[in-house]
Length: 173
Image (cartoon, rainbow, N blue to C red; front, side, top):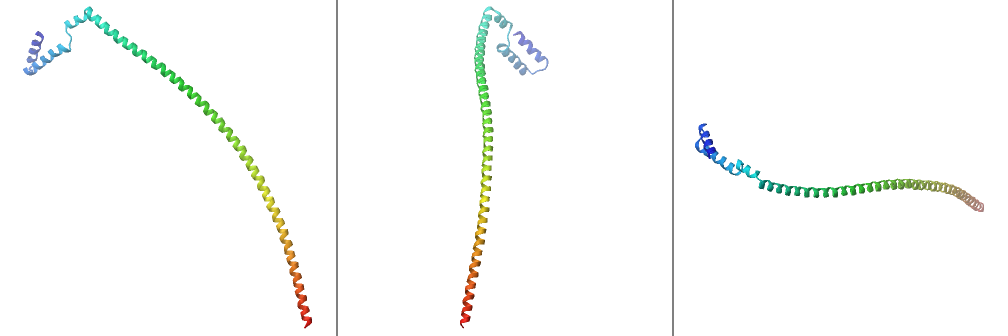
């Protein structure tokens, strides 16, 4: 109580209005009852029961922390196993990719060889076809020449016969 009066008198002495001085004193009193520890409160904590109660609370907290650490340790171990599994999966994928690259290279080489063989076969068949066309053209040219000669001979014979008939008809007149 003495502290409250002294505080009130000090506030009034520095020209703080009395209602505001009363509010400050009331606030300090509330804080001292709920928030601030007094010497008596500290003495109570220092007793054996307070220490024992505090020790028990700390043990419970430490036990909880240990359980949390154990759970985290298990989680970390599980994560390590997951990472190891993922590393193995990645290594397997790398091997698969390397195998696919080799297969693609082999298929590419095989396709080049097959395309080369097809190209050679096509070139050979084209050359053969050209040769056959040239041969057929030459034979057709000979046949046409023979037919022309035959037509010329036939037309010549027809002209000779027609001239003979005309001359015979003229002699008979």
